[in-house]
Amino acid sequence: MDLGASGNDSCVTTFVLLGLTETPALRPILFGIFLLAYVATVGGNASILAAIFIEPKLHTPMYFFLGNLSVLDVGCISVTVPAMLKHFLSNDRHIAYGACLSQLFFFHLLAGTDCFLLTVMAYDRYVAICHPLTYSTHMSWSIQKASVCLSCVFSFSNALTQTVALSTLKFCGPNTINHFYCDLPQLFQLSCSSIHLNEQLLFVAAAFMGVVPLVLISVSYGHVAAAVLRIRSAEGRKKAFSTCSSHLTVVGIFYGTGVFSYMRLGSVEASDKDKGIGILNTVISPMLNPLIYSLRNPDVQGALRKVLTGR
Image 1 (cartoon, rainbow, N blue to C red):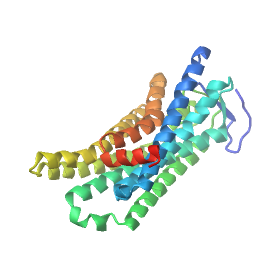
Image 2: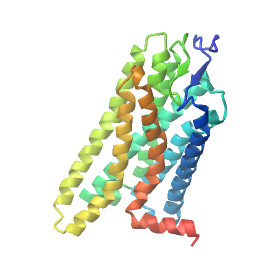
Image 3: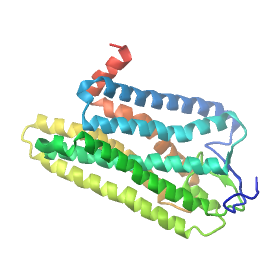
Image 4: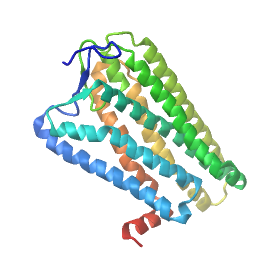
């Protein structure tokens, strides 16, 4: 354990990330798996961005938001996986106190922006299907930019608040984190000072960035479902629902893993389960998003073919 004085009166200057396994024989295998996952995620999301950029049909608000979501996905996996790959190749699993807080800040910044952006995308589908005549007004270029900027500002405020509040805690004993990246629940368990304020801040953040967006998404899709069911032709209903199914799938994965990650604060025995949930949230979800959005979308598929074949 590395102890010493630090700027926030904390004794611990480094943490030890246990990672996914302590079995040396499994590390090269896991390194290969997660390296492939990282390359696939970066490549898949970069392809989506290139497709949106070169295909005029995709120059719409929905794909503008999807492009931003791809950037967030690459950022989210880049915050956690490269450090994990490094630990697979080395016996040194230490992470400096400052690096741990930086990882925490950027993870919550990107994940929080994801929350708000998914809400904006649900509103976009609501306006497109329920108010098509005023769609261009409600989703003008200035509103699109403002929506993304506000999402970043709100998320930045939350990430900064959580990080600063955590930096006031004292860590004077165990410094082993049973996870593969630094996150609030695991760090709360190691604190030797009161975490009451931190838990209250996390509760407020969960309500503001989790519950409220989820309610708004549900209300938006409730109106969408009612509007679609009024369409007389089966083909029309199928087409309308197909534009929303990809987004709903991503929302389900994102919020499902997020709820399980933070609903069991202080539960030591849940740490191993949290690793699996963390993999879903930080690796699997960003990797699947390009596939989900292109699977049943002929416009995206056509644009991707242009990108991949160079035509």
